[in-house]
Structures are given as structure tokens and as C-alpha cells.
Image (cartoon, rainbow, N blue to C red):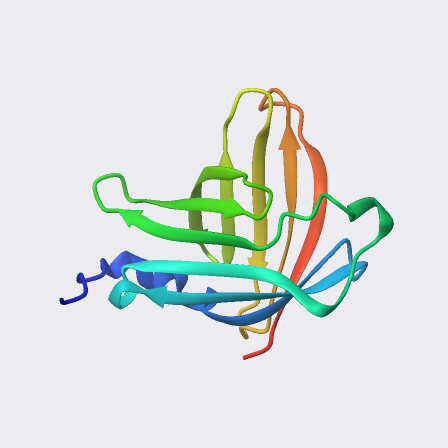
Length: 154
């Protein structure tokens, strides 16, 4: 069986590919090993994240860690938009919209009672992604949830 032919717009996600260590709240939580890899011949970008054995978790994170987590990012050529399917070890499953533009990776969802958005700067040299997750109950008043930094391993 042959792989599908990937849409050229997917190449905008190339800066994310690789293996990263993610740290949350500065360096209070981490490292979380994260890999972004092309699947199905480059038609989808798959992200997998899980705790490394040396990961440090603060007391307030115990029992609330959304790991392991997986995301599948694809592209809709009729709408010129990226979609991310998310699932984690808590049984949470969500759909996000995403946008890689001008060195910034954005991801968001609008859901009654729990809107979320993520914005990260992609280092032009490719060594880091630095950003934050925010949430809102009404989609208007936003609160910072967690700062994250990804450091490229390879």
C-alpha cells in the first residue's frame, strides 16, 4: 500500500520535527520527552509526549498530569487550516485549530466553559520553542495556565 501525497502546506510544520525536552513553569516541571515526526509519508505530523524517568513533578501536579499525550496534525486544503487531534493518559480527547505563521505556532479551541489557546515562538535557529497555554471560561477573559519551553534534543 502506498502513502498519500502530502499537501505542500504541511512543510510549514517542518521546524517542529525532531525530539525535544519540554519544561513547564520555567523549569519546575520536566523534562517531558516530546517527539514530532511525520507519518503516512508526510501527510500527518504526530506528536508524542511522555514523562522521562528523571522528570520532576511538583506536589500540585500529582494526579493531574496529562501524559502520555499524542497529537495528530493535518491540513484541510479547502479551508487552508491545520487541525490537531489530541488525546492523553487521562482519557481527555480534544480538537484544536492550529496555525504556523512567521515563527509563531498557535493552537486553540473554543468549547463551552473551557476555551484554550497556546502560542509559542519558534526560535529561528531551531533550538527552542517558548510559549504559554491560556484558558478562558467564556472565550473573552483569558488566564495564563502554564508556561512551556521546548529544548531540541535532536
